[in-house]
Image (tube, rainbow, N blue to C red; front, side):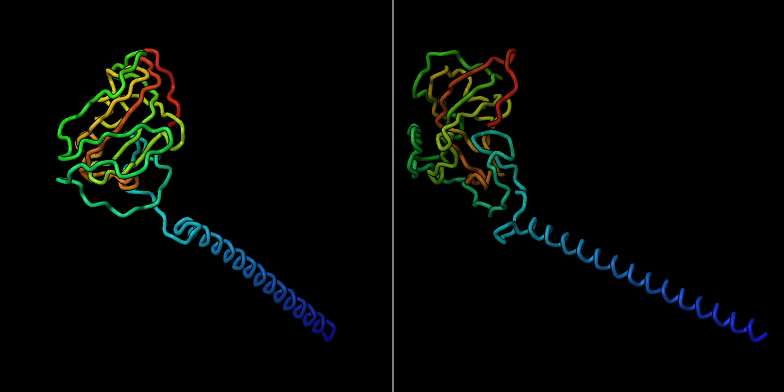
Length: 235
């Protein structure tokens, strides 16, 4: 009987030791899981903070306005997604003369000073000698754009030295209606009422206020008829 009792006591001690060791292993496993989870959470928070505030510590966000440049309806044309303050409406404000220096190689923009245009202005500054642009064509152009109420240049292909290519069905109404009839090599002044440009929304990232009339000088360097047009080059 004494031997059996000692054997049972020994088995009990071994069982208790095994249980304690198993509990320790479980506790260690839980601690590792908690540690790894904490590291993952920290990484997620850091990535989220960088995405929210940007590298310079300032909050960035995708602009809520479908902003565009040079009449193109591509919302990424400005190359920036930084939220900007809304601009005051230009409704009722007169057009003023060009107030910025011209980029190298850019033509003068003879803004008509006074009341903003209420109908599309088309004035050929240079008549081209090449192929004539038809409605719906794909064209390659150089351009410079000026805001009516400020006289400021809001965009220009002359800054990069690269013309842009687009279909005439991909642009603001003032370009869709204002460029056909031009010939390659020609330059045309366009005075575009706000309702044929960016209307009451404006394009704050491009410096275009709501209800802003726009002035452009556009030079056509190439035109491709719709029936034979190919994939557009990225502006």
